[in-house]
Image 1 (tube, rainbow, N blue to C red):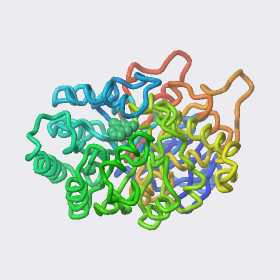
Image 2 (cartoon, protein in one colour; image 1 turned 30 degrees about the vertical axis):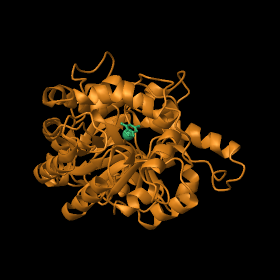
Image 3 (cartoon, rainbow, N blue to C red; image 1 turned 180 degrees about the vertical axis):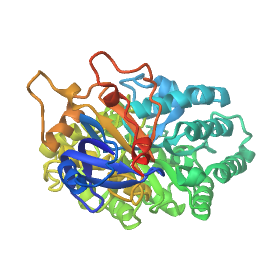
Image 4 (tube, rainbow, N blue to C red; image 1 turned 30 degrees about the horizontal axis):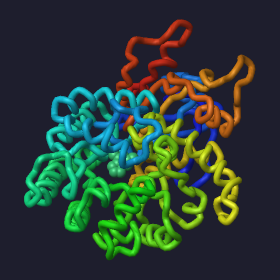
Length: 463
Ligand code: GUN
Ligand code: ZN
């Protein structure tokens, strides 16, 4: 049992806040109980054996965060190229990096990246790799060892590519290598690792590659991910390359690429028709507001999309976004939404209610889980779910002593708007502690059990 503050969105909507709560996790990493400590203790009184309780207060337990969109090979260039727009930035900062992202590069970067994600609170990540299969094998192996929940795919390009495959062989190579990776990794470790067929975006793919990769995703039950409507120059290129499509969404629709297992990153500049079509097909949007600000791509009208019934979660889009932190992504999203509320005169929905800190937390957890179709397993701290969660230290976000925030909205608001690099103290997937690169032990004055809580062991001792 762990005694902590507990803040969680709920699968059926709303949120739960236990200022003094307990959570139990069984030996298989599943949550068995989430309740108020006083009530739990009263119910135990008089019983012979009481399970050991690890008290980590004032730390708070939250569900692990879900990053629906990031590019592993791009991490070394995060934060570089400010001022460039998408297409120029890809040429200058991204393709050269991905071209050299081979097996060795992946073997050294992936473990570090997963540790960094855990240290920032991400327990599930959906990644693009580079165009080399061996780098994807290394990435999946690293995730297998680390414990993070991973969806990943080898990026596919057959119209333009940084690989030297002869043009007449590109389609076959892209599809064949991706299908082999899917066969090896999709569903691995009881579904903790999944494959996503990953055509980069319409600009670098032929209609054949889009269509055939979507068919493979359907046949295997894997995901299908790509970029959609991110940048004005990209839109112009897509209109030129696909003259028969009605609009950008139609390019993917004609390929059979829409549906609940399809994840579209960005989706900023959409017409009402495109929004309707995405909503009708339950296609998933990975909202990447920090990237959209960094690359000057635009402002996605989140409120309007949600009012239209679109399925939306959050993505860091590293290195389009400069940081892997979903708290940082939430902050960028909140500022973007706030600005749209006062500048979009014609759009009643965009001027609608504010999006609260707990709503942002839900977007980064339960909504992300819903987007991936895994909300029955993760995304909130509720009995029956797998224990994907994080412990955060709200003390590190307090501006001056005595200004602590005790309400859930305010506590989470501080995590989003006054983040501290060390505020995520621990992360677990299925109750297993994730390595976060900070094993040097607690700093002075810190209770060791607060810095290094373990869960499965604690629960197992309760028998
Ligand atoms: N569109 C196509 N490729 C990319 C990429 O790597 N990053 C972003 N942000 N957009 C893309
Ligand atoms: Zn991206």
